[in-house]
Length: 330
Ligand code: KG4
Ligand code: ZN
Image (tube, rainbow, N blue to C red; front, side, top):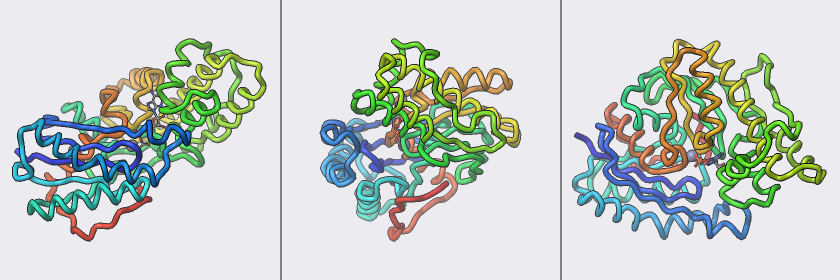
C-alpha cells in the first residue's frame, strides 16, 4: 500500500504529513506563523518564506518519527508547487525535490487547490466523482465540477476578492486581528444577523461568478458610521457571505452535470454558518453534503499527501525541474 509524504508551505502554515492510499493519515504535523505576522496585520511573504525554511525539515522529521518510519518507507514525495506566495512555495518544492532525489523516490508536484479539491475524498471514502465543489479560502472562491483527479471544470470564480479575504478584512476593520475568519465567526455568534443592512453582490443574477468587494466597502462604511455594535456587523457580514455563497452554488447546481454530492473545502469551509447554509441547499436538492473536518479545511499537508496519493495511483512522477508557480489555475 503506497505511502506518500506531503509537504505544504504555500502561505503561512508549514506542514508535513504521511498518508497511505487507503486513506490512513499516519502522521501529520503543522506549524503556524501567526505570532511572526501579527505585528504587520497580515502575512508578510518574506517572513513566511524564512519561517518555512526553519520549520519544514524538523516537521518532516517529527512526522516520520511519529510514524516510526524513515524516508525509505515512503513511496513518493508530494509537495505543493503553487499557487501561493512564491518564496514559501519554493521552500516546500525544493525541499520535496531534495528529499525525492536523496531517497530515490518519485516527486509529485501538487497544485494546492487540487489538495483542497480532493481533501473531501480523504475524509469520506464514499465520495465519488463527479461532485460539485465550492472551494472557498483566503485566496480563492470557485465552483468546480470535480470529475476525477486532474479533471476539473471551473464553473465560477470571484471577479474581485475571495470570501476568506473578506472575512480577514472585516476582522481587521473590527480590530479583531488574525486569524480573521474564526474571530469574525466567534463575534458573529453574539450578534444579530438582521441588524445591519449589507449588500449581497451578484445574488439572483444569471452571471455565475462571485463578488465580495462591494460587501467589504459596505462593512467599512458601517464600521465608520459608529451606528452599529461590532457583533451585529460581524453577524450581518457573515450572513451576507453565506447568502452569496449559497445563491451562487444554487445556480451552479442547476447547470452541473449530474453531481453525486455537494462538497465544500478550503479555509472558509471551517465556518459553521457556511457549512449549515450549504447543507440545507444540498438537502433541498436531494444531494449528500460533504465537508471535511475543520482541521482538514484549512491549509495542511495531509491534503497534499492525499492529492499526491491520487496522482501516484495514476502513475504521476514529475521532473525535478518542475517550476514553482505563484499562479496556477486548476
Ligand atoms: O485554505 P486556507 O487555510 O488558506 C488559503 O489557501 O487561503 O484558508 C484561509 C482562509 C482565511 O481567509 C481565513 O480567515 C479563512 O480561511 N477561515 C475562515 C474560518 N477559518 C478560516 N473564514 C470564516 N470562518 C472560519 N471559521
Ligand atoms: Zn489553502
